[in-house]
Amino acid sequence: MPSITVRNLDEDTKQALRERAARNGRSMEEEARLMLAATEGQSPPPLTAKPSTTEHEDAFSKADNRILLIIGGGIAAYKCLELIRHLKKKEMAVRVIMTRAAQEFITPLSLEALSHDKVLTNLFEREAEHDIGHIRLSREADLVVVAPATADLMAKMANGLADDLASTCLMASDKPILVVPAMNPAMWAHPATRRNVKTLEGDGIHFVGPNSGEMAESGEAGVGRMAEPLEIANAITGLLDSSPKPLAGRRAIVTSGPTHEPIDPVRYIANRSSGKQGHAIAEALGRAGAEVILVSGPVNIPDPKHAEIIHVQTAREMQKMVETALPADIAVMVAAVADWRSAETADEKMKKQDGKGPDSLALTENPDILKGLGHHHNRPQLLIGFAAETEKLEEHGRAKLKRKKADWILANDVSAENGVMGGDNNTIRLLSNKGVEAWPTMDKTEVAERLVERIVAHFETETVET
Ligand code: C5P
Image (cartoon, rainbow, N blue to C red; front, side):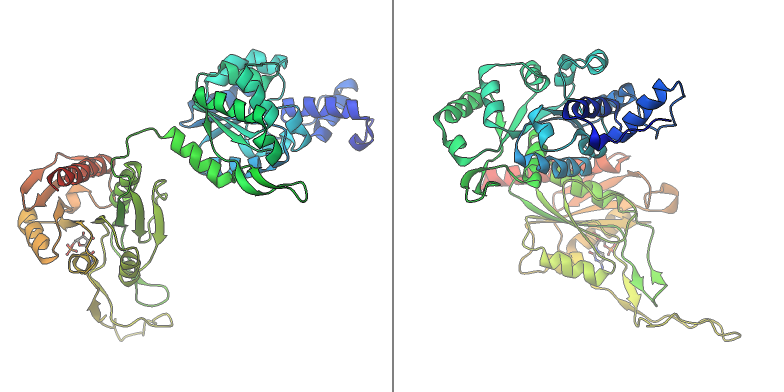
């Protein structure tokens, strides 16, 4: 079978091969190998499984948060690799269009590897146009991001030029557009760019950056540096999430999950709490705009997206982290903290001794975190606890309200037959000094949302009263 060395090809052939390989989602070497195999009349060697454009398209169109990332030709284009990583971590789907100039700075291949999607480069790409079409491409995203937005790309946008795939999609889009400028400070300060920025702002285009600092060109500094990937990712999250933020400016601490209290290096005391309810409350508070610190015991569920999470093992670690996180406006203590821990923790695994029977385990009481907050000099303004009971729900709940100096107690029946511990549903009675509210059985995320509604209402009436 004949062979070629890609590096020895002339520039035009190399470019043609690069484009063809990118279109087919292969490396240049792989593409060349397949072309040669085809001319030899051989069947091509098996390819690594790659979804077809249609499969890609489906995955993208079904995703919750879809970003069309248009990469312009600037040295800062490399930052898009990290940006895609951040967006993927936030479970967003990313589809990339590169301008011709952008391909001088980074390769479609590396972007394909990160975005898990075909990178589009050419308006006149028959296959892509047939499968997706530039109009659909520009509409199917929830947000269009232009990064780096060069002076040239911004000038095109401001003047309605559409002569390549990137600028055509920008004109055809009916979605919010976030522009991330990156250019030399003199170009950013130039009257033409100033005019274009004003026009684009007037058109409702959003901006993040540019920042001030060192430029890639040696000796150049000033305003023009592209915003950092995390900053861009946060701006994207902010633009996608347009829900109201009634708890903006409020700080909340939430505890969740069980605690593990060690007996020796391999054994511990624990309980059946899954963390589902606490995590759902942290997420709902975060979505409502609160700054949330979630202190969680060991759980097997994903971290919430809208909270800062601190993982702990024991009740004492949990208490320390909760108190370190003070002051707070709101505290919701959901964790099923172990009431007792082993009075002593053995350094070595405790051995069974034949014929002697088990040693008795001496226990000692753990600190009560909720009660500690109730009596704290920095007591959160609204202190909420749970009361997991198997009998006399209201009576025990009321006693806890008083003893722990909480404002509200969410009492729930955790008898085994209800399947609350570890399950998805919960039936709550909200106890406060105003009385009792009985909620129907709901999914734990619905319980979280209803609780957040009550919290919002609490702060609203309080603002009206003061
Ligand atoms: O007393 P009991 O464990 O039933 O109280 C439950 C409430 O108190 C929950 O809100 C729980 O998070 C909190 N708690 C605590 N620290 C403990 C025990 C319970 O914060 N050591």
